[in-house]
Length: 458
Image (cartoon, helix red, strand yellow):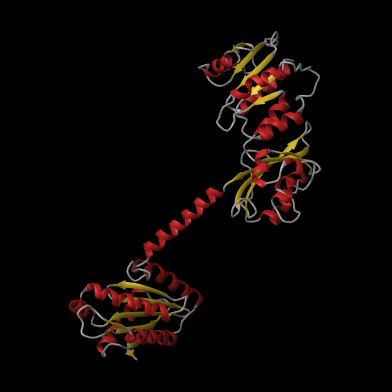
């Protein structure tokens, strides 16, 4: 058996030498170098029993296969990447009688001798269809793919359901091929799959109904093909995320006669993305949180203060601010130590959290100072909240190491309201003045700071 090897891979002839060595026991192989590009003289392929076309680019293989098929009646077998069922179908329509693709290990040599032996008896008259036994070969290509794949015809009947698809869905091919019930593998009630929408040409009008929010988009590489992703709770242990594509199958006149849909399990990718989001959120929270008290930190206060002031001014909604300071905190630290002082700050943070609403935001402003933003809150409501914090903290008790009895601490709190047009500096300074006035008046009290005259009154 004489074989003409048309090598489109590279200039080092590695592919030619590998194939020739593999077929040494059953055929005489002659390599065509430089790579055939369709520009050579017609008839130079006569006298061969088989043409082997090998390449690493599907587009180049398709172009050369089409020209070779036009020029010769010798059967053509393609060896290449064949990245997808669509590429395999295009090569068969271009004239290839068979295709050797890489297995899951990236190897193609296992089937080479088998394919060459079978192709030897395939005489290809010039007036025959551009592909032979397409259904059988398409079935071999689809079933041999490690990518879960199914094919439907123009009447939405399943024609191919490969082993990878059966393994993923748990439905064997003999139960689904010849039916229009492929939806049962994915959904609990009858509805079109993406391939069905491609066959009907209704992807544009129906896509929102079935695939809204599921990453639907036209394929960037295949005209007329579409992509989406979805979660399927019935697959595997706890459900699986699938990325799926659907591409049309067309006849010689360009009419859609079916569609091929491929599925890819992206569960691990989705889990990794979710874990990354969780990690990013954890790091974000760490960056805006005071490590000791668990309240937001001063840097985050600056950001949130600006946002809340802008919102209050835009919509003319009330905004109040509470500033508090632990009374005689330096004396407590000097007497009982900073470790015991930290417990006082933690307890005050707990009291603040317990007395505020979910919409309020508390921050450790610095040292023993705390600040609270109260959106949608009038000053009299803020005063009541501050009084709750003051009373709860006053009732708290501490027993520092070496203390003869329980120790109580108090806080002085200033409260004020936002005045549209004022700066954040003036807003915070006024609340701070209220806290200092509370200390001046005897500590352990709440003082309202009026914005107009600066007068400080209970």
